[in-house]
Length: 236
View 1 (cartoon, rainbow, N blue to C red):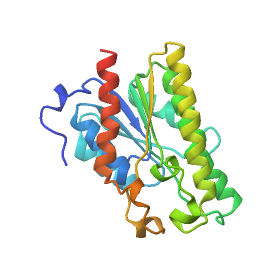
View 2 (cartoon, rainbow, N blue to C red):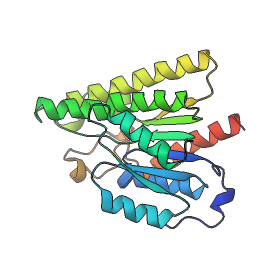
View 3 (cartoon, rainbow, N blue to C red):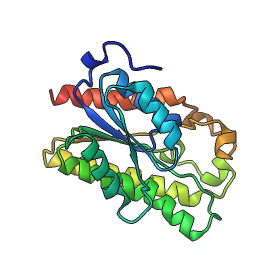
View 4 (cartoon, rainbow, N blue to C red):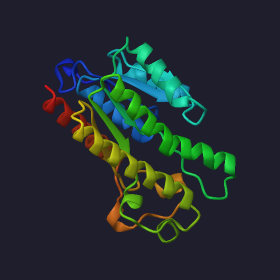
């Protein structure tokens, strides 16, 4: 989908938004939806450079790529600094979409990296964005985790570490959002909890329970856009 004609007059015209893990799948759908409403998108990736470059070329409108490993020590700060530099010093929103999905037997080093990407990095990027004057941050959770489903029952077992990290991220994000509201902070923090947005074969797990999905990447992107649209209206 090319950048929509008239996007400069869209509901996010003038916004610059960082989307982590934005080069493909859900992230790419989010980038397309935000760009269609006039946003300039900073598309973060770790190792999908070719797909990210193609997406940036497709969207145009000043869209640019940001490479970085969110699992590395200080990775969130490095990604934030690169995005801020590419955006000319102003970022209005962040979508923390990047995630890893590993079984419990993946090894401690790999699981620690997953924890960093799924929990620590989204929270740190939210703090950095708010401190820099961003207007909205959207976290991407997991609908089945949010619904309290047992990973062993829902996914065939072996994903308790993943579930714990996503659960902690959602809880800590909710607490941070409540604190920002109580303190009258300008930035709005929301969490979107999609069901399984990838085909089971892509995730290596059985289909999720009926109450948690499925969701298409485009449906997730629409939910993310609504969060930004509400922030744009409330702060206009």
